[in-house]
Length: 412
Image (cartoon, rainbow, N blue to C red; front, side, top):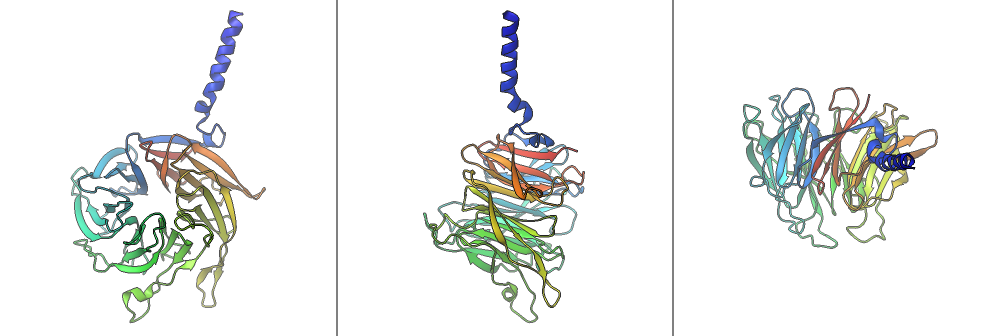
């Protein structure tokens, strides 16, 4: 009896331990990823990037939140502080690129964001010192109310980075509808020596513009802007026109998705947005809907050629909600981590039962399969890049209330 009792206790312990041994989802698919804690103590972590900071050709990780911008050196993940709460209070976004061509990255930082004070917001450019552990120099750039997202791109194909600056709200916006529209601007001419903006070009304005993405949509070196806002998802390009004013080159936003007109303001449209590709050549559009929403949705569009040989999208259709169980959805990324030609969708939320999940398209069944990768992160943001140099994209997430920066690496 004693021997059988011990055996029963052991089996019960093993059964209770299996979810921990198998990973947060308990599935075989989740076991294909290695979970690496880059930082387990980053209070208020809000955004993450993957970019080469020190010029050694290895993608590093940059995280912001709680007033702090920090970068982690690949592969040791040694943490170095770029800015602290005294320099960048209310930090909300960063965009990292080698702006001046010296082999070391600069970091554009958006800070002094306040949810219900839409006239507040500042932008600066952080420059590295001569040595890796030297303090960074903070160069003020502009005051931008409700500043919320930053991205680098190259719209005029001059091989110089252009900085996209997006606000969440307009200056007169008030809860709960936040009716005043938020400006979207681009700095296309930054002085390489001083880092001073020569022009802050207004591109458009959108209501409750929560997220943007900047992509080389047709892989021809020309950047496009994607917005996720109260109207849905839209696409904006820049076209050079001889003798035109600088802002004349910005095209009108092209709607990619349409918001539910019956839904109340600030509770419709899209909240996060990314573009990917499928094995059959179609463009994949992934969104979280609505603002801080519960749904992960995907759309597909073919690429067409116009009469003059230019590429264009055929129009997104066939909306498919692949998950409607998010609570305060706030993180999204797309990447082909299994080399099947179809980009997987990665999404996370920060509310109840927070997690990061992967959605893999099963072409034979024509359906998306969900795999929970991590339940121990209140996901605020997701980004990717080939961090370990194995030719496969890796995924990095940050958790706000869980205070962590996590790398998910697909095992060989």
